[in-house]
Image (cartoon, rainbow, N blue to C red; front, side, top):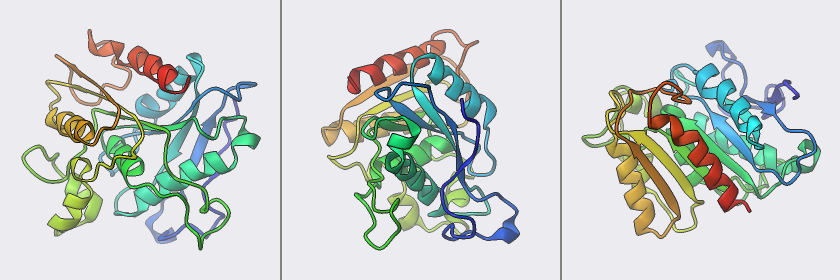
Length: 267
């Protein structure tokens, strides 16, 4: 596997990038399979509350597990606080465009590109899957490519920035302080589901101690009402931040269920 970094923009051309912040310009780390051009590819967004990136157990480990199951993977290193919306969303959309625009060179299928993410990375997953476009006319060659993922899998995801199920600090880390209620509502997945959204795979635990399970339930309900294909799993036990959940009975089955779902929707 090629472990090189694939920069999303040429150096110095990342929109809204401030070198003084001290973060790297966004990039994807490829975990591409060899000689598997028809295999699906998943863009993986680690969580971390839009403050850090938990890029081991919600990043590298996930990518390697995807590879073991015949799925290409790419881990997204997106910008986090003090960067605010729309920086993270720009990074995710550009990553999808980059994978699709270079599909032939990367050995992946341009119409089997999905996105998944954990916690805050799950929120980013929802934004990419619900606020996509078919290309930016005045951008470069990559910008002209569609940012719509072909499937999406938010995992114990923050889906709402408003209401009783909100996760502490997430609104502030997404839109800044003071929180603009209208903007926060427009970045809450249950409010922006569209009929042309891609299929979703959602999982959560009923006892999540940080992101209430209502986040998953509200999203699934909104998808159903719009006629968007959705598979939802709520496991009875498990804390937040489980990753592969290998030591959590019942929840440890989520990954196998997701792989089965990916194979079904990309066949």
